Length: 196
Image (tube, rainbow, N blue to C red; front, side):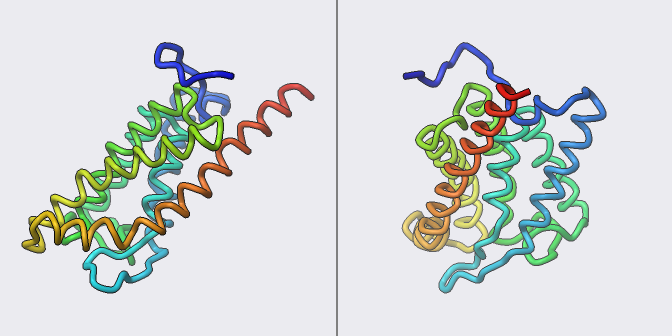
C-alpha cells in the first residue's frame, strides 16, 4: 500500500506530453480556455447571487492534469484575461467584479494546490483524488466566501448559507467524477506503458 509522498515528485498528466516550452504554453492556454468553456455551463442557484458552473470542476482538473506551475498559470491567465475583458467568465461575462469574482480568484490558488498534490500522487487513487479535490474546493471557498460577504454585505452565517451550502451537493458530484476520471486515466497510462 502506497502513501502520498511529500518528498518525491511524481509526473502529472501534462508531463507525459512531449515537448517543453511550446508544450507548456499550449497547455496553459488550453487550460484557461477549457475553464472558460466550462464557465458557460451555468445553473442559477435559488437564494444565492453566485451561480453553479463548470468552472470549479475545470479549474481543479486543470490543476491536477497540468501540475502546480502550469495549472496555476492557466488559471491566472483565465483570471487576468477575463478581468481585462475576455468574455469567458460565467455566462459570457467579463471583469473582476460581483459576488462570484472571489471564487475566480480562488481558482488560481486551488489549481496550484491541486497540481502540487497531484505531483505527489494525489490523483492516483479515487480516495486520494477525492481528498485532493476537496482541499481544492476548500481553497476556493476560503477566497470566494469572504469576497461574497463583502460584496453582498453578508455576515459569516449568510456567506456560508449563500456561498457554500447550496454548492455542496454539486461539488460532491464533481469530486466523485474526478475521483473516477483521474485514477482511470492513470490506469490507462500504466497499461499503455506496459504494452508499449
